[in-house]
Amino acid sequence: MTIQDKLYLDRFNADKQSHLFIIDPDVCLNKCPEQYCTKFCPAHVYEWDDEAQKILVGYEGCVECGTCRIGCPFRNIKWLNPRGGYGVQYRQG
Image (cartoon, rainbow, N blue to C red; front, side, top):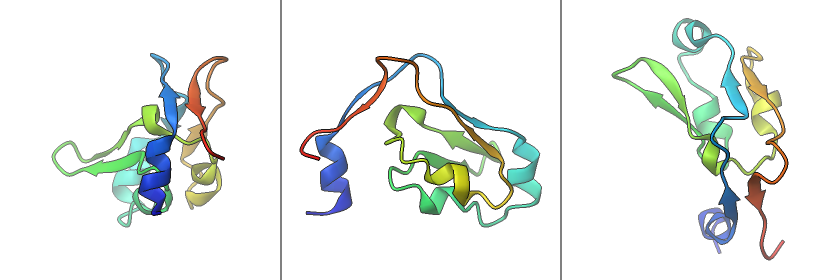
C-alpha cells in the first residue's frame, strides 16, 4: 500500500479558514528557489504556482504531521492547530 493509498483512507473536516500560513511570500520567491515545502510535505499541501510566483497552500488536505514547522529552512511557515472539530480524521491508524 502506498502512502497515497493510506492518505486516501483519511477523512477531512476542513475549516473555512486556514491553519497554515506563509509568513512572507517574498522569502519563497527570492530566497528559496528549491521550494522545499513542495517536496517534504507527505500530503502535498504546498504547491508552487509559476504564474502567480507564490506558494499555494491547500490546507484542507493537511495531515497535521507538523513537518512544515521544522522543514522550512527559513521558518517561513506558521502552523497552528486546526480549530476544534476540524482537521484530519484518521482511519485504520
